[in-house]
Image (cartoon, rainbow, N blue to C red; front, top):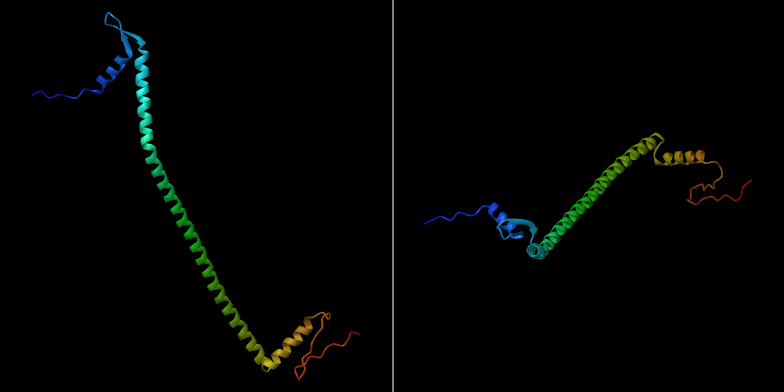
Length: 159
């Protein structure tokens, strides 16, 4: 048995080129292409391209839609991470503000205790605050003075 070897690509290209040119009666080819053959082959090539594009386009649309969905999902995940990190930063800032407020309040408490002890107790400290407030006013305000009964003495008029 004889093995049939496949023909090389060059053979097929020569056959296609021969298809396009007329042969003279003496056996030699002319350089005038056969118009009908060229139109036929061009039409077939165009038809094959249209069929391929028509067959592939729906698959491409499905693939493109899938990629667009994946991109939207990735963007949504990224946006969610941003929101979570911003919320975590606010929480951390709030916790640190609360700790700072506690430390400040403890400092004020210790300072008030030292001043109150130095002035003879809480009553002396309140008198000190009242005198300090009177010192800081410019005299254009109405001042209510507390009395022993807890009732204020109202200013009757200015002189």
